[in-house]
Image (cartoon, rainbow, N blue to C red):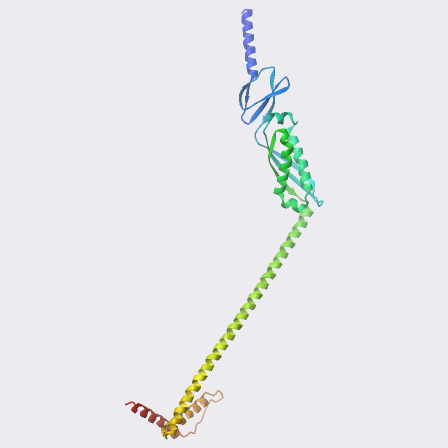
Length: 306
């Protein structure tokens, strides 16, 4: 093999090495920065790219997908001097690879420290009750502050979530007692309100019952008075008829009247509670005669229409 052949082989090998050094494949979800003699020139998006070997080189390989960053647990003193332990999580995405690579050193550590300090600032300005009940408000304030601070780095913070807020044990016990007392108070109020409503309904029912009873007595009295009035009218009519018959000399009418009164008196004696046995040495002929008078009146009444 002569010298020319060796030169050709060396040249081809060098060309292959240079092509291999210049060809760059960028995976999906990443961007590479290109530096020429140490200065940033451009960014390589996903796909196959060719750079000038030796002159250009890949500077930083940036992940352009949304990234989850855990915020370690820290102690925070609230506005009312309560010590709580807090941790959280940050979701962010690199939008500008060059800014994220050259505007800040160690992007993850910078984002973690920035979020940690702002958690302490935001939550330290609230009292404990607000801290436990307004978690959405805390997340919104933290997101606005951290996103504004990371914008010059080419980073978009999409979400910040407080995962856990842990008050001290003695404070938790005190809050539990307070909640128990509040529940017992509400239960007592509801029970008293129920008793009050029951008493009102009971009184209203008794009132309605009294009114209905009075209405019933009024109606009964009216009916009794009407019945007595009709009975008096009937008796007056019967007495008038009887008086007319007696005035005309009708002996049967007199017998009927006496028999009726006689029978009523016997009925009253028989129905008396203190009379168990009645011995009646009565004149049967008087009763029979009165009954005969009644029969005679009936015959005359039936003969008269014919």
